[in-house]
Length: 438
Image (cartoon, rainbow, N blue to C red; front, top):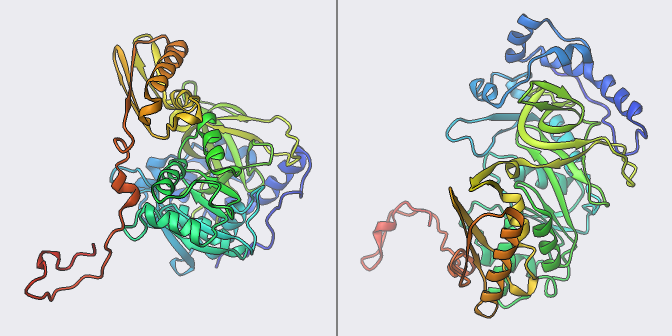
């Protein structure tokens, strides 16, 4: 049996970096002892020696995502299978599963971390969870945290035919949903679907009091536009299926790493250097992980970590998640990144009604399309062209297209016929639908 974890730090248990470091040290020995039970780390320790303290931890090689895939399915298991509560795989692995698994005790830690919101989850809330439930951790994480806080959960998913956008906005409106958890792009789709249903975002959803967002990079301008559309605070979250929540925002809009629950490092792949702060790839060692200890796991997410003080008083490192925003395409003599280009798109006046856009970077030309109503099309195209030329000094072609071009109207309004499979049909029915769920 694994050891019982009787106490995990909570915000306020420390007030200085030294006190935080002592909390980490107090837990590290138990974590390293747990890691020895994992077949993967037993092999690794056979070449490096069993780590005993922070210096030994720092001498270990980084654990990579590919190593997690190579250890599929249970090569990192450090508890008897009977103690597992859930099994997960992360998204975007192109056919190579990245496994993750958790005990009930692990889930206590996961839920506590996710619930660290400056706009808190309460028993009075109705909480729409609009992220995947299948295999990934995202939907289950919010669900568990909300139930822990006593909220009413609406399990919306976003990979299910049973929950099209028309149903999402109906649920938001009719159930007086007060909190939501989704990717940022979802919120823009809700706004368009609400308008298609005859409702105005914000004004006709008075119960809504915060939007919890994560799962994709979010530029400052798009974040501001989302907040304006719905007239509520936007609260960002950062984490992964392999680790759960790693960082959350304080009331001053800064993202803080949960360094009382994990040790964080910054890896610089160009030099191989490891630092406490700076710009590089985030390396994480979760401190309260039973089922699948991870030592110096390189998420390979590009981040900027700083140790600056924050008025919130949490005494935690701050992080800016660059993610895919740090990756760009060359056009002429400039590198085009999604974060910067998205920021320009959402710098356009809100009155133009631009919510959806796409771009293609060619060697000598940047092509951009924006959905925009006829009345604002010329002005939006001219202004965005000038913004791009000023920011990048590259040839660009901005085209305004009619609403419904990039996001078809049926996506926002359709109600899918989700049925149970059947095999017997009448003479005037379509038996080509036999066994189908839709």
